[in-house]
Image 1 (cartoon, rainbow, N blue to C red):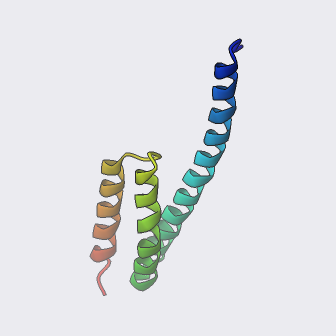
Image 2 (cartoon, rainbow, N blue to C red):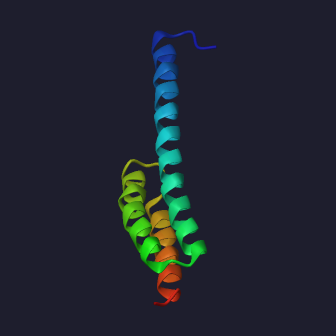
Length: 88
């Protein structure tokens, strides 16, 4: 258990930040799931729409340090390639 006031404050800050980051990651995963579902359904147009919606969410996550920027770039690249491969 923390004994110093600064350490106690840090614990409070970390708890708040963890909750906020959890919500942000959940939001990102939701957007990714929508893209995955659209790709699985085989509808290229809905996949493109979902992809365009997910892009800024992922970039925001990278900007805020939730996900590494290279991870975001890799995921976007792979999803884009899968959507293009659908044809149509």
